[in-house]
Amino acid sequence: MSPKIKIATTSLAGCFGCHMSFLDIDERITALAEVVEFDRSPLTDIEHCGPCDIGLIEGGVCNSENVHVLREFRKNCKVLVAVGACAINGGLPALRNFVSVEACLLEAYRDGIGVDNPQIPSDPELPLLLDKVHPIHEIVKVDYFMPGCPPSADVFWTFLSALIEGREPSLPYELVHYD
Image 1 (spheres, rainbow, N blue to C red):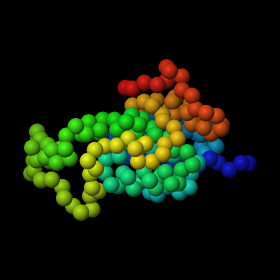
Image 2: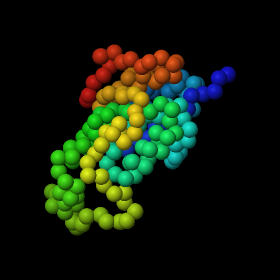
Image 3: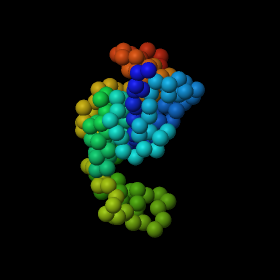
Image 4: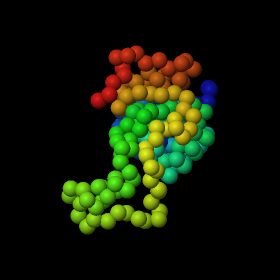
């Protein structure tokens, strides 16, 4: 029996929708578990990624913690896949790129509608915000891009099946969409 392929996943700045879509492969996850072992993922609750064959990462890079997690993830994954619009181009979190960080914080925590007890969080343990949200390829080398917002479960299945079988992933046009 050949060793299982190790897969890890993580999320940066985003909505976690790509992970939810991945879990929508439903009963196919049993077949996947026959040939892969999950490292860091929502299924294992492992905090730090160990050496892996395939890393799936969703979300953009908006703060210093995201940069650290992304670099650690890249270091441990032979193949890194940017999953979804936020990882590929910053997605919705990148809408803040059109205003300063200060203006964004003031709107969110002091001046915005419904703000009660206005104060900007300043705990030293909070990660420092970057001046803009970056797609992950601006920080580390990315091997593949899995489009979609989120990519459908069938996209995950088609893409991962190809990688696991040693084929170049190819997605039919009708599978790629943005909800």
